Length: 122
Image (cartoon, rainbow, N blue to C red):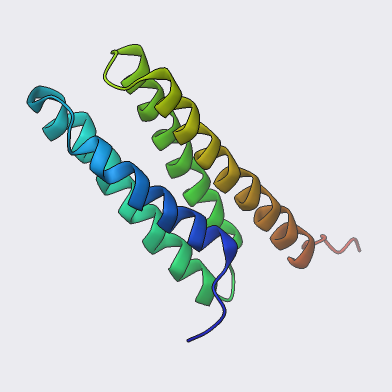
């Protein structure tokens, strides 16, 4: 197996920690907000694994960035709706932010690696 990218491992660890918490949400939120976050987390992991093998990664990574932001807001909703404790929110936010920092670095690296198309002047 190839060497694992840290961002993939961080996402995997977030899923392992977060899913049991989301599965204990009250029923009226577990099957709406909880399921959306769970689906988003699995989709995020899939997207990082796929990005690893793409030749042109930039557009894919920018889409992932938007997905990560959605998870960030959904997590904040859990706190605002008083569905998770502040300490759990802070821990989840720190994990999500760590993933965001890595993703931002990956996007910057891809922007530097992507040649800019400059128009030819006659």
